Amino acid sequence: MKDAHGRTIDYVRISLTDRCNLRCIYCMPAEGVDQVAHSDILSFDEILKFVRVAAQMGVRRVRLTGGEPLVRKGVVDLVRDLHAIDGIDDISLTTNGILLAQFAPDLKAAGLRRVNISLDSLDPVQYKEITRGGDLDDVLAGIDAALEAGFNPVKVNAVAVRSLNQDYLAFARMSVDRPLHMRFIEYMPVGDSSGVCGHGWGEEDVISCEEIRERINHQAADEDLPQLVPVEGSSKPDGGGPARYWQFPEAQGTVGFISPLSRHFCGECNRLRLTSTGQLRPCLFSDDEFDARAVLREGTEADVHALIEQALGAKPEEHTQGDHANATETNMNVIGG
Ligand code: SAM
Ligand code: SF4
Image 1 (tube, rainbow, N blue to C red):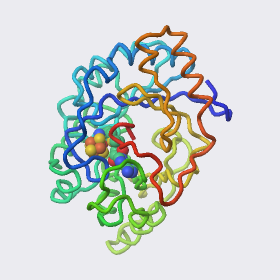
Image 2 (tube, helix red, strand yellow; image 1 turned 60 degrees about the vertical axis):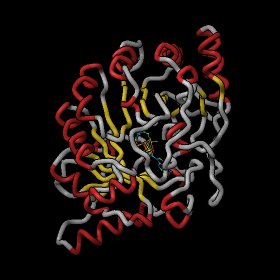
Image 3 (spheres, rainbow, N blue to C red; image 1 turned 120 degrees about the vertical axis):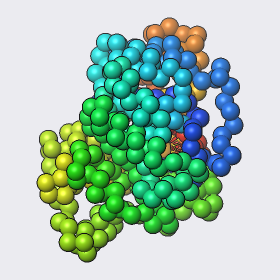
Image 4 (cartoon, protein in one colour; image 1 turned 90 degrees about the vertical axis):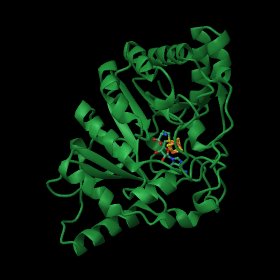
């Protein structure tokens, strides 16, 4: 299916819950979020109805996210049912990895193909601070389990925030001996949480992908390690997507960079987002929403089809994110990243 700007839309990101077992400082307030009533959250049957219609319209790929998708009961069954929908050939998951060691084999057997694991520090003390209580060992066990289960690719995503002073080379090194794809994501002005260290989202905390790459190369040179080289075409972990990939020579994995604010990927945007409360969002950086929940509860598949058409028609050509104001007041745990 095409949007009003001629882009092919074949990908839906679905937030399964706004709840999470962590409280990352840039994503959620310390006290957590107001509990959304269970009845306001889309049921699995409603999600399946949405995906069936979307698949008839040309959607091929579904990503499950959150909040933390693995805290939603029955997630393995949902993956199995999504996998059975005609036309859906790629189901993936974005997770903080805390529960992944427990779920990886069952998710793989149910038809999940790929996982992205979010990890912002390899230092256990800093990891605990950023996530307000998370245990780094759980995530590392999750990464091991994902590789063992045979997900391909396994990507690790780190949000880069200047004042956190993360060790970028330590991350990049993870891509050398194992087929892990390490990606750095620019910090985005999303949500109403207090931001890093309580001073709100600030442009001064955005560190560009170019700078991260330069820092990795500097640190590598200091340690007599080789420099990153660009990865071209089919050697990229998923043959495309918004990341730009680099690699240490002879490494099994890659190092990718995603700069959502640069707008370079609006032209290739291929997705819609469905929030946990069933709001269909044409663009991550806009609060425009279409109430899919009402239609999924009371309407026919033809009504769902019409709503998806409407959302497609409302996809902006590019986001108009200014440099200072928050693009959306909705926290990432609700939209799903
Ligand atoms: N809980 C899961 C996780 O952490 O992977 C899935 C949901 S989380 C909202 C999805 C992604 O959004 C995570 O990688 C997180 O780091 C990222 N994220 C949240 N707030 C962000 C922000 N302000 N800028 C950039 N990325 C952000
Ligand atoms: Fe939870 Fe993911 Fe947000 Fe961290 S980034 S608080 S793990 S939803």
